Length: 185
Image (cartoon, rainbow, N blue to C red; front, side):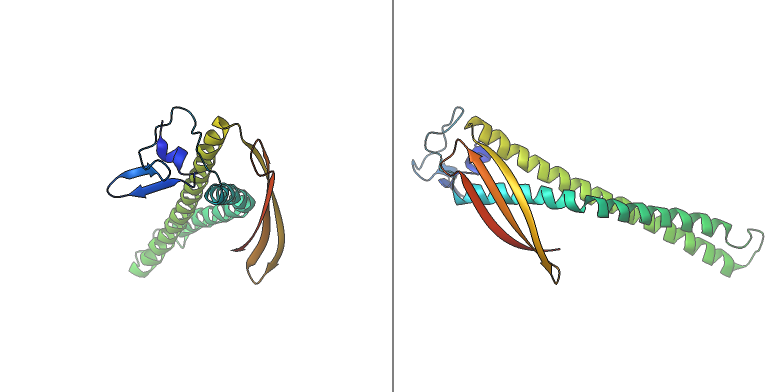
């Protein structure tokens, strides 16, 4: 079992350069077969659970805007390449005209590169967030803890979005938590 995934949610996790990952209660390396009877899921667990789910919600909320930006940047790049190719006539032997044509075509390829890098960065961020959520959900499944997140987006003032994260739990000490956040949008 990968203890770092398991112990990363526990309040009793302790790491040091000398000993690596140890349990703060036993002062020994974790000896967990499937679950730990001494696991303490509290603030650290809630913070990771909320931040992971919140990141996925924000990414999905911004997905349409990001894809539109990528689409229009790509279209602009293709139009610049085509426009540069057909700019004036190829039969003119002026160095200036060739420079302008190549400059326009170069800008088109730059726009395509920007669109590709933005798409790649978005996919990387989305996959990372999904992977983190999957790790947490796998651990919680072992303890038979289920949760249902609800996100309430409130006022947006001067680029700062106020929101509340409500988590309802089944088979855990706490039944419900609510946390308020302010994030830059």
